[in-house]
Length: 269
Image 1 (cartoon, rainbow, N blue to C red):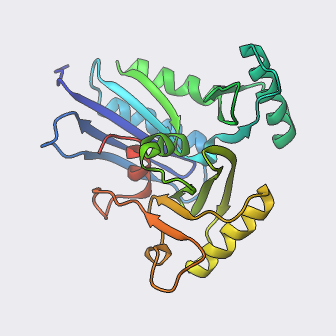
Image 2 (image 1 turned 135 degrees about the vertical axis):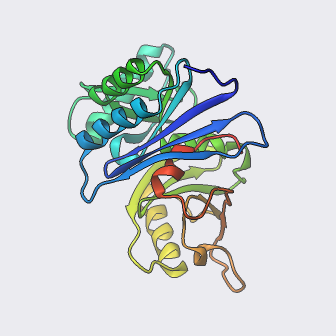
């Protein structure tokens, strides 16, 4: 197969669809939507079979492949390190215990990754090991180098980390769901996810943020910074004094499906 220097593929996977996007390190080359699929109902097995077929149709020997998973496919939670934690085993035990408390089961069958820290609360994520194995098999079968499998929220948070304002919370909109990282100063306090009702306006957003602040025992943030296809009415406007809201812009084709935007989450601008 012909090799293209500086090219790579990004695959966005959600329970109801997927998209494959080609990207380049060269600024004059725009991202290209190669393929997409949408299912009427959530069907992860069908999505994975379609992903394998699409990768076979776009075989690129030796190309890097990055996969972004919608947050419905993963589990996200915040972990407070135990007092006096000195070993990695202490952090892993605290992470597993918090997982069991939140999800009512052991993390067996899930691969856990985290922003490990012994001095501050950190974000952890878990991906089904069976899903990872299928992705690895599909990528290897077509000669791709699977270099990353990342939850969308983690990819978005890392992408915009340098832009997070003091006193701000961070949010991601995808597939009609709002995921929010609540911060207590610079420390992560909680990760909360909620469906966005049809017609959700700025009043709904302000009420939602106020309720989440109460649930996690924090004051209302000074600002909410949001990426993804959020309602335009959420942005700050004259007379809105409860908190500011910033919507991060992107340069993607507005006609691209959510799955393509999912695939591009975390990519360099």
